[in-house]
Structure formats: C-alpha cells, structure tokens
Length: 366
Length: 223
Image (tube, rainbow over all chains, first blue to last red; front, top):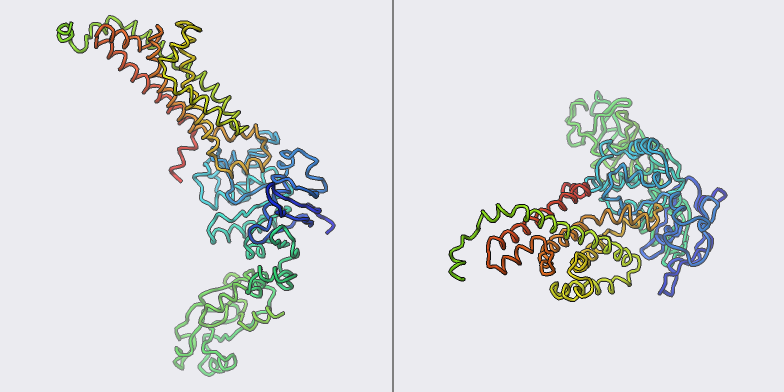
C-alpha cells in the first residue's frame, strides 16, 4: 500500500515478567482514510497493538510511523493530542459537562474560546446529540449518548487518525448496531484513518474496509478486505475464527441493490381465479401477491381464494419489507421467517421486486 | 460546699449575660485555633499525599508516622511540647495539626486512588501530562472524598481545641476547665454547648463548600 497513514515495522512487545511476547514481530500498513479493524480472540494482542500506536504501550522493539513520522520523534503527550482516542468505557470526565469534555483537546492545544464554542456546536450536531446535552454531565446521559459524546471528544481537534478500542462493547446489541451505522455514515463524510479493535467478527465485517485477524501472540494471520477474508480464509485459524456461517456472513456484505430482483408471483386485483392458479402453478407455491405496476397490496393464501375476484380475497401484508440498501443477510432472514418464503423489496412505497431463497443461495455459491 | 452546689440553679443566666464579651472572644479564639490547625494540616497533608501518590512506596511510612501522631494522647503531647515551645499558640497548633494529618492524607489518597482507571486512560490517551491530569482531573474528582476528610478533621479539631485550655489557651475549653475547677455548671455548659454549636456550624459550612464545588456530583442520583 503506497498511501499508508500508519505503518508498523517488526513491532514486538514483551511485557515485564512474561516470556512470550504479547505482540511478536508484527508488520502492517494502515491505509489513509479507511477503517481498519484489528480482530481476534482475547489475548491476541490487538489492544496492545492499538495502544502502541499512541504510545500508551511502548514497543520492546520495532518502529511505528504515523503520517510518515516515527511516533517516538514527538513527546508522547504531543503525539496523543494529534490522535483521536475512544475506549470501551468511554472515560468521559464526570465533573465536566459534555461541552467541556468535547473541548478537552482543543483547550490543551490553546484554541481560543470562540473557536472552541463553534467546534462544540459542530460536533454535537455531527454525532447527532441533542443540543441540550451540551450542558449536561456524563452521568445524566444514556449509554448511547455517552458513546456519541466520546466520539465527539475524540474528533474535537480534527485529528487525521482515530483509534477506537472496543468502542461499542459497553452498549446493548440494538444500540450497538445503530452506533455502528452512525460510525459508517460519519466516516462517509470525514474520511478519517480509523483503527478499531474488536473481538466481534461480525462487527469487524460490518464496519471494516480492511480486517486484520490476529492470533495469540500478535501474529497477523490474514489482512484483507472482509469479502476476501470470507471468500478465501488464509488458513484454518482464520476459517475457525470466522465460524461455520461464513457463507451467511458474506451475505451481510452484499446490498440488495446489486442483485437482479424478480417481479415475483404478482397478479392484479382484478384478475380471476384462473390467472392466479396459473401463476401459482408456475412458481410452485400456494400464495399469490396482489398489486399493479409499482404498487403492491400484500399477499393472499391459496386456501383463502373463493373463486371470485382476487382483490376481494383477504389480503395480508408482507411482514418484513426490505430496501435496496438492506443486505442479502437481512433478505435471507426475511425469507426464512415469512410464510411466503419470499422477501418483497420496496423503495419507500414503490415496489421493486422480490427475492427468493434460490436467488440468495445463488449469491452464496458465487 | 455540696450544699452550696445544690442551692445553685442549673444555669445562671445573669452570669451568661455579664460574660458575653468573654464568650465572644473565646469563641473567636476557638475558631482561630481550629481554622489555622485545619488549614496548615491540609497544606502539609496535601504535600505528603502528592508524594505518596507519585511514589506509592512512600504511602505506608507516611501513614505510619501520621498514625503514630494520631495515637499520642493529646494531654501527653502538649505536656511534652511545653518545655520546648512554652505555653504558646505554637504548642497548641503543633499538636492540633498533627491530629489532622492522618485523616486528611487518607482521604486525599483514597479520593485520587478511587477514580476509575478508564478516566485516567482516556485522559492520558488524549494527551494529558501527569501533572495536568492531577490538577484538572484527579483532584477535582477526589473533592467529595477530600472534603469528607476535612469535615471529620475540622469537627475533631473543634473538640481537641478545648484540651489546649490546659496550656492557657483553649478557646471555649477554658470555660469548661474553669467551671470544673469551681464546680460551676453554668460555665461548663457554656463551654460545652458553644463547642458543639461551633462544630456543627463548621461542618455545615464545609457541606456548603462541597455542594458549590461539585455541581456534577448532585446529578449522579438522577441518572
């Protein structure tokens, strides 16, 4: 990689009183403007590796460069003021308001008051905190709000590099998924160089542009984009770590919009019994969708058809609907949990088409 | 003599009324002795605590020495000091300051040590130097514990000041001592009641100071 923002060369860390290194002879480059995820089982040295970048841990040997400069060429605290840092427990200062927490690094860098106040406003908006949170203390915020405040604080002085150590580990799964989405949309606007540590392979696949899989002792087993890692695990360790459901995980990387949708077994409300039966026979199913052009009302079970106009039969809505940005994994879930064994895709109210199990498995095989 | 005591009313308000000036000046003396002792004790305790926090190995000997000071009976300590420093304000203060140290050092160190490690990690990770972190993060967060120590030290000192009556000082304690010597309950009661009022007043002032300095701690219960 030519445009490396962070570069590790032969980095080893042996903690005092231990014989085997926590990280052994690790070399890799982190590209600029991408999210690189360090993932692996506990004890694999991922957090140690992250902390060596901002010198919270000093390597035993090897060199680390950030933006082409050896990290030891600066005083440690000077270096750290130029690198955003987010930890799992967030570590907001309880005695300072959210605004004052966000102002931490700009104040250390000696920004003037007006500039700091403007920056706080900007960041509170950027991370989607309500403006009235500015003057609250951390103890008054929910877990998700604290996490957003922590990210705002890390971004305050606009550092090119952001280090995140299990940033979503302390929140419940629903909030975690939302915060992951927020990080991705934030990154679309900011293009920071982000190094994120997690033990959760699903998180790594979801948020990472690149995934570095580490084994105990800080050994880099595979370093590639998530799709490639899932398609071609470098060895048995990586395959095991990815889990048995590798094929399903790959689906989470493929958005529905990249797949050709079928029109599906749809008939107009004015159709009669004969037409409906023909369509059901062709698809080998016992239900039929009702709608016209880009509008769809729902579906009717074959047992509810009374021989009259299709539109007069009891129409049931599709339980789960998907958008073009949903992943094929979402689609699979919708298919498996629906009566119809098919997932309808909508763009707002507009019906785009249907995904069947066959069409999804086709993608896994390829 | 016993009959005489029995004849006396429990409190002679006329005595109280004719000694208001005396009561006021002794109260002022009591406050001075207390405030000087706690203030000087706090400065010394803070210095020793910073040493203990910076070099953790020094914590055990520092608390050991202040613990020994704390266990010397006050009467014995004043008696020991008189040959060197006389029946003076200094003698009183040496003793009084000595008794505040253990409480204050323990609370300052416990307050700083009790801060969650992630707050320190976040601070260091954002580029705080150790000194800056101490003043801006650690000491402010330790304030509730530090002030709790100050409250105990101040209330204890108000009580100990009465003992310095034995070296001719004593603030309100001088009433208690004289009252005991003359079997005069009114004077004893004035000394005792005023000391208690003073202790409660100083404690309330410190509670107010804590509330003013730690607005963030009040919100904890809401979360």
